[in-house]
Amino acid sequence: MTTATLSAPSIQQPRRVERLIAGQPTSDGAGVKLTRVLTQDLQRRLDPFLMLDAFGSDNPDDYIAGFPDHPHRGFETITYMIAGRMLHRDSAGNEGLLENGGVQWMTAGKGVIHSEIPQQEAGVMEGFQLWLNLPGRDKMNAPWYRDFKNVELPQFTTPEGVAVTVIAGESHGVQGAVTRDATAPVYLDVHFQAAAALSQALPATHNAFVYVYRGAVTIGGQRVPAGRMALLANTAGSDGVVVEATAGAKTLLIAGRPLNEPIAQYGPFVMNTKEEIYQALNDFRDGRLGEEAQT
Image (cartoon, rainbow, N blue to C red; front, top):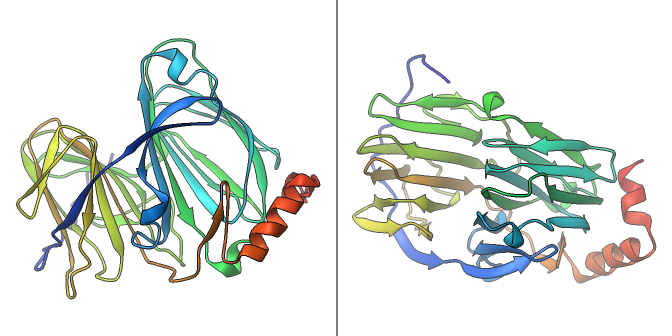
C-alpha cells in the first residue's frame, strides 16, 4: 500500500455520463452464470475493449464447472478475482492459481488454448474478465502470461479515504502493474471507505467507462447504481473524470486509447479481417493453434 505523498490531479473539465448500460445475463464455459457488461455491439464505441464479464455467486452450481480448454487468438484477457480461487493452465505451459484480489493478465497473441477451473466446492466465486484488443501488428505475437497476487498490485489510499488498486495505467502518480504502448489502458479498482470523491486524469482521446459493483456513485450529477456501466462521454477538451460516492461503494474505472482498426470476431478469435478469422479456425481445427503457442 502506497503511503508516500500522492499527486492528485486537478480536473478542469470532467467527463459526463453519456448513457447507462445494464449488462446481459448469460452463461459461458461449461455453464458458468455471468453478466456480460460490455457486449459486442459496444466494441466500436469502447475500442480497444472488446468485452467485460462480471461473475459472482455463492451457489456452486453457477460456477463449479468453470471454463474447460478453449482457444484464444488476437487479444488479451485480464481476469480480476474478487473472491474465490481459479486455476489456470494453458498450452504454452503456464499454470497459476488466481486468488482473492489477484489478477491474471494473458496475451493470447497468435494462439493459446487454456482452461480456468474453480478450486473450491463451496463459497463465493466473484470477479471480472476484461478483453483488451491487440493492434493488428501484434495479433500474431507469441503468447504472454503473468499472475499478480494482490500484494503485488500497486495500491494507495487518498487522504479522503478512497482506496485504489492500480492494475494498469497510472493514478495519482502511482504506476500500475501493467502498461501497454498501443492501447495505454487504465484499469482501477476503486473502493470508497468514506464519503468522498476521486479525481482521475484521462486523455480526451481515450474511451472510458465506470462499472459499479457495490453501492452507487455519482458522476457529473448522474447517479450510477450497482450493476450498471456508465459510458463516459468523449467530450473535446476533457481532462478526466470525478467519481463521488458514499462509504461502501466499489467500482471499476477503465479507459484506453482506441486502435481505430477493423474488428473481425468469431467467438474466441478477434482479428482484423474475415480471412484472418478463417485462418484461426483452420489452425484450431487442424491442431496448430496450441502447438504454435509452445514454439
